[in-house]
Length: 125
Image 1 (cartoon, rainbow, N blue to C red):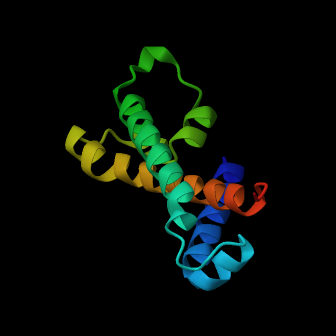
Image 2: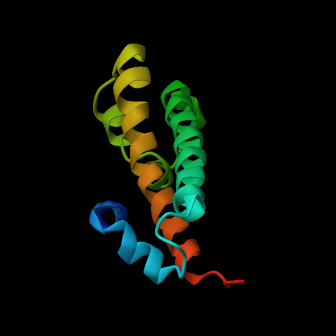
């Protein structure tokens, strides 16, 4: 389980570093104009998609019955806050307004990272 936590921490650090870079430097790396509106459209779309999907995954993980025998390592990789469900049973309100949004934020950072990598390495026309 430590590998998943370290990988997610590295993605989070990368996302913060990319978020702190000046817009001009990112535009220069992507060979685009600094004021191009499409410069950040791909990472933002991927952020929204990942956040929506993994919000849903967190809600499904909460509502899963114990009889399903979900693999804890798989669930921890899909929903890092799954260990909270394993240790104590949070309320449905806490899931919808605290834990699921946190899971969406973590995987939203993964989405931004993958969107930035795609933007940097795609073929330029």
